[in-house]
Image (cartoon, rainbow, N blue to C red; front, side, top):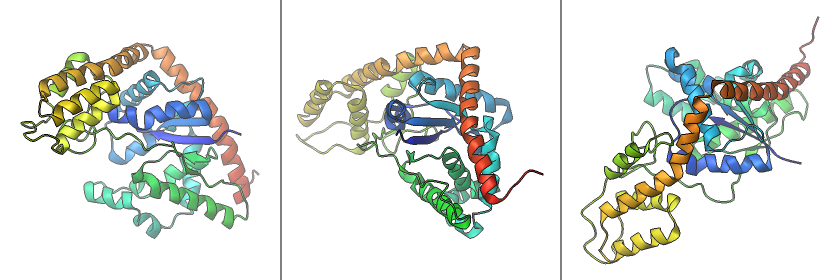
Length: 330
């Protein structure tokens, strides 16, 4: 029997190399082996008050980019979170099982309060409940999570146990973390430190054209080069090699590592090769992004059919949960 896998997709910003070589390539593998539900988390994004005039356009763009990068609506259920109203109703019910003090102690809430003290809304506080709802409503058994969301998964397991105990049932399974078998590739940014991301302004995006990619790589942070053979690499240079290892052939990586060890490295050559290989990986995806974004009927069809399948699963869960809780029609 296949595992049921649920994972949310952020609804703002373009996909970058970090997304692609991180979770996304594993999502593509997962959809061949499991019953997958991938959703664009537009309700979650409301905690930051996105502008209404470009809200839908961003959701549409993210959907197109994930489809172009390899998610297949014939293999997985791909939908927009807000298209499944059962999620909001189960979210309300599960909120009744979430003590405020417990939610206030979550690491993510404390971090958000620190970062956006002028916008500490109830959605931020109950974010773990909505995340648990997304998972439990489809009876997920596996959830791919990063380090920063491990606490949310544990809270999801806790909500499942609490519901089952309170209502003397064994209704919700306790999902476990999806083990990819290997450590996720972490793609650093071009600014010499940290991970690649939109907020850091150091990303290489799947939708970037060739000129943009080459310009960004050319401006990547380097140093004056090694002066001693076999010298350790500073972080900025190691970051470039990490990206090179993700997009280039093994012999290419070995060639430039040897040049670095022997103090013969020419960063201009390294950057040119890196830009060539990034373009080889991303430009075909960019072409698919452009084709999909220009086909409004296809995007609408994917969203509509995905919502129908997701609602079929979610409505069954909601109906059964309400029955267990004692709701009855008059």
